[in-house]
Image 1 (cartoon, rainbow, N blue to C red):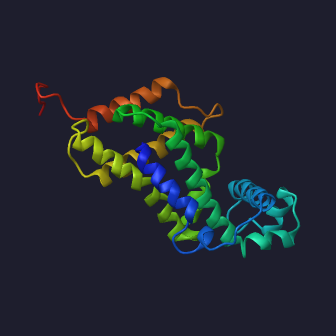
Image 2 (image 1 turned 90 degrees about the vertical axis):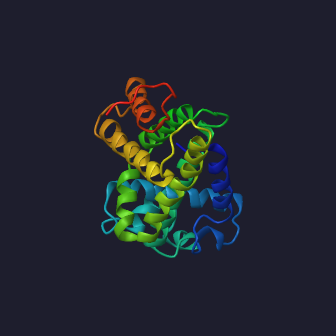
Image 3 (image 1 turned 135 degrees about the vertical axis):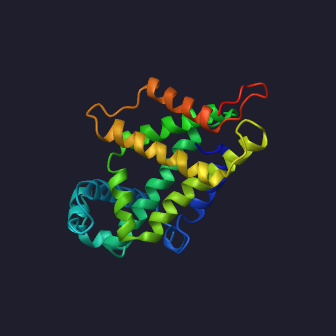
Length: 228
């Protein structure tokens, strides 16, 4: 998955202001208690939007689940769409942080891919509503929907480009490869985590995935026979 240094750089941008058109970057600083309340509202929103469509979900449901008054909600978010958009950004930010932590200190690209995918699958297991929420964003807030994938791809492209420069991966368009690998991760996570009661990607399946990447993206040894 992503290059660790690139992810860290993205995380610094996230902390400074998660969304490019306002959002976290423009909201006033909160007390520790305020941050906890805001986090509780986002956690509640995640559960509500995972269970219901955007239109079916309500602020009342979010506040009731969070155990806060309706008026408290509006201290943090001006509308249902605002909390939804911030939730998408928050999930993306936390996912990128977990991937960065998982690949910290790794140098070989295949090792980075293995542990990055493992972190993505574990995050998906713990946040089963992730797919539904992100897909809802396409119609609820197209900008934040595209931003979610663009930010995932940013560090990925940088890490893949480095692997190509060092000869570990063969030269190709790193943006295309990043989106191909992101698509593989999403489909595997859907099939083996969301569709299965046990919700887990086995080590054997993960190794098959890495073998596919190795043969599809990695550079061939100089003396490797070429097949037609």
